[in-house]
Amino acid sequence: MSSSKMSDSKQNIKESLFSTNFQTNLSQEQKAWRPLHLLNLYRLLISGIFVALIFSNTEIRPFGLIHPELFKIVSFGYLIASILNGFTIRWRWPALWFQTHAHILLDFGAIILIMHASGGVTSGVGLLLLIPIAAISILSMGHSSIFYAALMTLILLLDQVYLQLTQEITTTYAQTGLLGGILFLIAFLTNYLVKKTEESVEIASQREVDLANMEQLTQFIMQRMQTAIIVVDYQAKVQLVNETAINLLNIKETTDANKPKHLYDYSPELGDTFLSWQETQDYQIHKIKQENSVSDLNVKFAALGAQSESGTVIFIEDNAELTQQAQQLKLASLGRLTASIAHELRNPLAAIRHAGELLGESPTLEETDKRLTEIIDKQSIRVNDIIGTVLDLSRRQQAEQETINLFQWIQEFLSEYIQLPQERFYLKFESEDLEVQFDRQHLHQIFNNLIQNALRHTIEHNHHFRPIVVTVGVDALSKNIYLQVMNYGISIPEDDITQLFEPFFTTEASGTGLGLYISQEMAVCNSAKLEYIGIKEGACFQLRFADSRRQKQ
Image 1 (cartoon, rainbow, N blue to C red):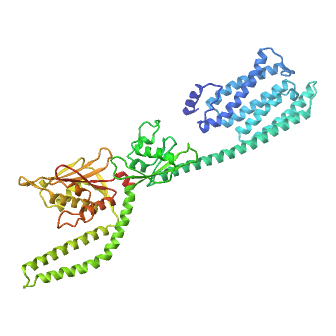
Image 2: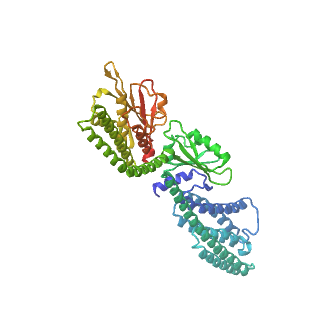
Image 3: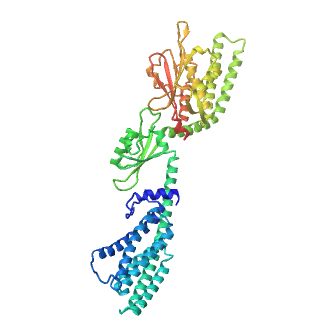
């Protein structure tokens, strides 16, 4: 016996020797041995009854009618063999197929001998053969039951012939034949039931595999959907949440897996919206605003059933993504528009500027007229710059995002593009490893515009300029990375704050009024948000990036 089998047997001996395990989570090996264990319980019951009759000196005919001593010996031997069989079954040694046939032969032999000692078929003991015949059909999957039925029928006939020759009793061959026919009927019926059971088990196993595959496929699809999905029951308890929703709502998974998760634990705003939807059951898109979120969320609910206790699927979409798609369409339309009018505008503009230059070169031109030609030239350049800026915006119709390390990128930007002493800038980084997903050219244009605005509006103080503060950090609540550019100078008037990001709004005569507008448009193209933060002295603009986990997904 192998060590593994010995360990299994020791574990099984700790259990009750004559009780079977009816748990549903049994292994295939345990399920294979359980019918043999049940048959042994039947064997113990029969032999125990016979032995109890012997010890009680109770004479119940026809048991032991012809050969009382043989009845006693076989009954005791049958009980002892049943007890020993209990150990071999628990030890699972010898093999299952060997024990199956050995136990069945034991049952047939013991019952035939007890029947012989009790007067043959007329005693009725032969009916006890029905259970072993049915058991061999189950244990051997129907392959041996017909053989044993034929064997038992033959032995019954021989026993009847022997009793007729040796004992003065009346034998009934018709009754023997009837019992043999019942044995065959039980064998055929049990074989049929076993076959149907096998087919049902095979179908159930295939259905189980199909359901498991379908469940895995559903989980796979849901986890990779760009739309955030949360499945809740009618009490707003979360049943399923995909990775997109975890990233979008900044969900922190609890370590206690047994603790029920409520929708309010993920988002109080979403929980309130769900309770309101339960009252109306409408199909409209609901908008919610999460605290410290870059953008709004579009939420739609769909019931999983008609009953009030049915679950609900919640679809959540980041409004920034929808805005980004609309922005791409707007940029595409703007590109087509500017491409069509650029030629029409620049040609006459070039002619006006050229005519002004020729007029300015005239020797007879008075000083007042020369001043007018300078205005024509200056304003022509400004209009040309506006057209060029709009064209540059329209050419970038789609953001080509890549991973950017902000610490390295800002250091390179200031050293390559801003030819100023390092004292003009004060850099504050929460970490040197902060990375964002952003279009490199867009980020360059946004940051360059903010730096240039800060340089223009910084006021000299005590014969030197106070530094421009560039801050990179992570928001404590939303966990979004932000980039701030702050300068010390005159604060922006409150009346102008609402128009800062409107196109062509400027407070300078030489400005185009498109810098902040274009910067905001490019931020939206990258699912980010450019906003103004009011301070007492100077101005501060913040570029808040979208969650990098969400963008990578």
